[in-house]
Length: 141
Image (cartoon, helix red, strand yellow):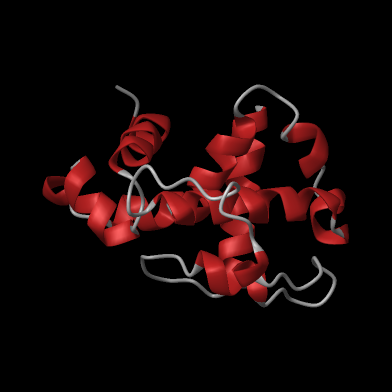
């Protein structure tokens, strides 16, 4: 299994653990309300403006998804799954963040006609550029 396939499985497991069944994924709530044995609770109101990307109205959600991914690398749950090593590979952190906000199973549930970057950006509350990348990761070019 490749590193990206492992990350996909870990993202699916995490989303399932938090019983997310529809978009948008409540990434902020997940980060702030970890399950037992995961990471320390995070107060996102304490994040500095320099941490959050503001290029797009949904860019802050991607910043929070990357923060969640980083917290997962050091918590027992993430360590058991080898996340630290997996996220050391080039751009895997960004890919994993996209997997968290656009889980494969939820993307695949979207009607084929509605799988446009603009439509899915609104549905998943993710920047259009990240939607394009995620669709390419799942379905190829």
